[in-house]
Length: 477
Image (cartoon, rainbow, N blue to C red; front, side, top):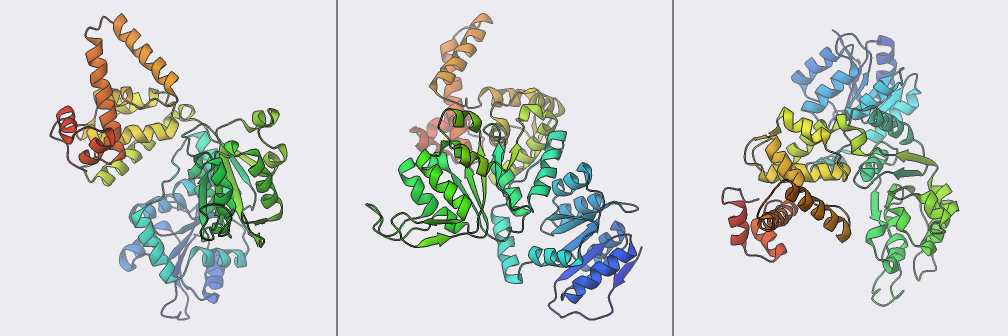
């Protein structure tokens, strides 16, 4: 093992960068370029050497690593670093831009993937973008500790292809349309595209166009001037201005009214707009990422979506697979969600038994990843033991909220009743009432993170009712 140190003494407050590569020439030229830019640089010829120094000297501010090296490769090093220093940004370098290397790097938490051979100026610029000022770093760390950003998880071919596409698209200033069923994680993909892009230090602004009344959506997007309409007492900055320099994520774009589609098309084409009631032309630099679960081509054919807007948004399309098409990812997702839920609820860690993981994989998950996450929260709050078995899981799945409208709920209830009666069940009304009450209570507790008094208030029942139906043993959240 060897450690390279440049002879010149850096400034006392210089940011520390480590370069890990078994090719001495690569270590030397990259370290020299980084040092000339004012960084304190150490070079290592192996993952073992870097890990040894990590234990003795603490983590650097940034680490570059090659992928293919003797001993532990760069992806193994990345995994070990993220396990002990999750906030350390790691830039993975490789001459092999295959699916395994690229997707493995991003899946393992790499900040960026740098293809060899690379321009030294580009590498130095990437280091500068990755390392904000010390004050900003402290703020970012505090924000991260307070509200960690959920991550895309998966190891199936479909997800590896998605990670590779994100890695390639992140650097390209192109509009992206993300499609997929409800609950597949479209906003997480948008976050990843932003986080891995040159715009990462600028705002990421999200807007669900289906959640805003149509009469208010124009103001939300473009802002308004004081007096523009009744109730507009002061100037309001719209989402496009808020996202200037960064990324604007427009979810459920298929629900946008046609008149607003026309205004959006102009902004995408020209990068300028007027606030509602305004005369000042506002110019912005925003990357727009849109998402929908609807068939936009079908909406165009029906005259409900502009064809020219679809072409403008659909420069690149990413199709997210439903969870039932990547069942091998279910155990990893479930264990991650369960661990997150127990931490948030401040309760003892729990784990799934192997049979329960098999049952999770066999489920069709019509609500996709979002449904799986909700089930894991329910199990974290309500499963009585540290090991979740198939009985716990069957109860959670049977109590899972039914997506959709009243007709779907009635249909599912009717199917359940028909099956139970055919099985010879008696006192079905009492059983249905008990399951209905428990489902409502469990969902309310899930949404209030286990706070019984708040759950009872939302349901319009007394707290004693919650305690009586669930039992006194549950810890208050």
